[in-house]
Image 1 (cartoon, rainbow, N blue to C red):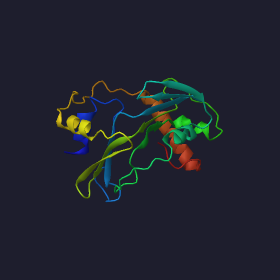
Image 2: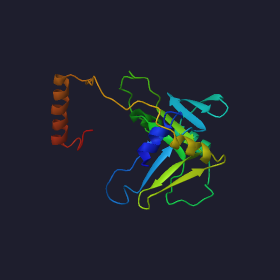
Image 3: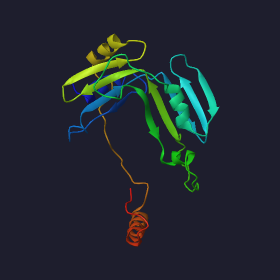
Image 4: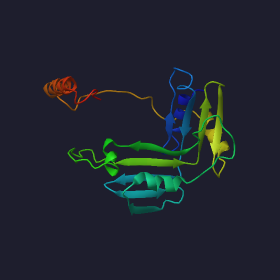
Length: 199
């Protein structure tokens, strides 16, 4: 069973499931895939206010922080997996940092409008998960503490519980004229040497 198939069977039953999937390519870049589920802690930070949610007992704490990653590092700690696995990544914090999160570490002007109100970062800390070694064609279950291998096996054997993804009604949030203006200005910045790339 592929990592995507395993993820599809787990995602319907587990909150905050994730997949880090390797694509085909050079061996070192396509060596492993990871599936995680049911984190023990979720950290959300917005405007320097961190909410730490203990997913096991439901407790929520709030902290002011100037460095959200320091907080996450302190929560992850120096955990060591007892077994030896082929990958250095076996659990820990997975999530996202927004583009604007750089302002926690760099003094930059705040010009962007916060129209979506997403957290500056949201990371979940996982105590167990699955590691797929594509080179060996093997999968491993790792854990720190509670061994939930039986539960994972049952989830994998079950049929997927979600509808297949579908896409419809795609639309741009930028009009054609505005987009063309942005492209023209970007070309000018590149020609003048101010930037070398636009993403």
